[in-house]
Length: 167
Image (spheres, rainbow, N blue to C red):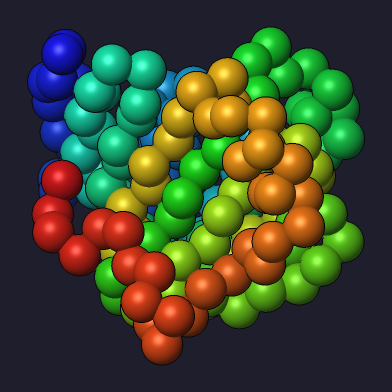
């Protein structure tokens, strides 16, 4: 099975808006998805990511300071290959609006995201998370059907953390 670190990057030595723009570019490239960054944060911005590829699965470990972003219905309609992403939160927190529902996720939580709905997010506290992203075609029809009915957010009491070990 093909497994390698595709990229390891951090914003050390890059200042403010340039660090934010570089992080957005690196994250979009690692994710292979399109989204719109929110307003560039004022002042210093710190971020890093590590990206591994295992077959068709992307594993992205990221750290970032507070920021915002969104995906519109236009982004959803232009998806070439639908995907499912398990997000495991190790530190910090994020507000997510997904398909009209609002969630607050923090350290210990897991969020199940997919490319089928418009999304808004706000990192409200410096964040460290691990994303396990896979094409929806890797999941069975039953799993995809269940995804539409299951909760999107699992807290630490559910025992659902996926990324406690570093990538």
